[in-house]
Image 1: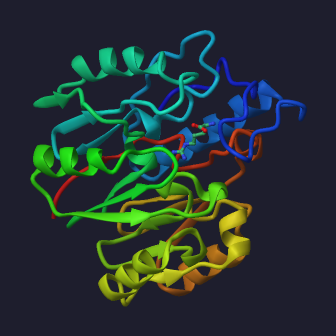
Image 2 (image 1 turned 90 degrees about the vertical axis):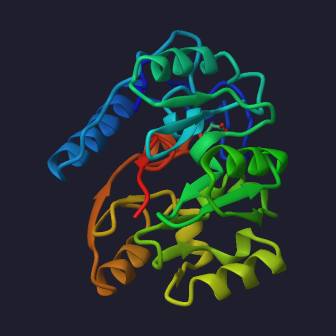
Image 3 (image 1 turned 180 degrees about the horizontal axis):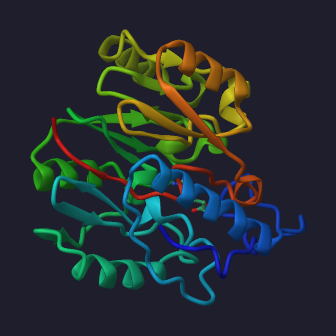
Length: 260
Ligand code: ARG
């Protein structure tokens, strides 16, 4: 994770960003610290990457790469605004103890568009990540990769429209995907939870989970209730300031996943 010390909204690289809306950096930092505290309270270890001046989106660590087991595929950012983040994150990865770090050829925005369920790698494309990077990921990690097509710019990254609690319990919003991807998700995840547009607009799908405990933005209470009813432990946090840049819980978190 990366503390939002230089957070601001100065460009419009996704439809949620409006530079004319004021942002409180102090509040963003408090909200982000509460997310870190929540993870630590739930038993997770949080590693921090040093924030860099002039990189307002660096707080969105999920986009810096995708990790499975002890291998890291670094990001190759789509937006010129965020490309300078790559060096900072790559330097961190070099000393973080991974067995292998891949500097990829094709554009990919890390866990923004890649989600490892524990069994397969779900891979989004349509707005940011180049589908050719899906093949790169398959060859590097040697896992099954399922390409999913995003169709609505409000859900510009896979992690704004889908997350997994367990390898079977995928939570997702059908309106973000094309017809074939919807059919594929329904076929592969019959026990999945389909969220509403309202849940998705509130960034309820931008959540993290460790098979039991789910950390979600508090702005999606109906989805939180359904997830709790399905037997999972739900913890909510307020990340309203970061939402002004089009990010929430998952965007702030690069998860180090493992195979079953
Ligand atoms: N402003 C950032 C961007 O548009 C937000 C990134 C959110 N991250 C994510 N994993 N969805 O790139």
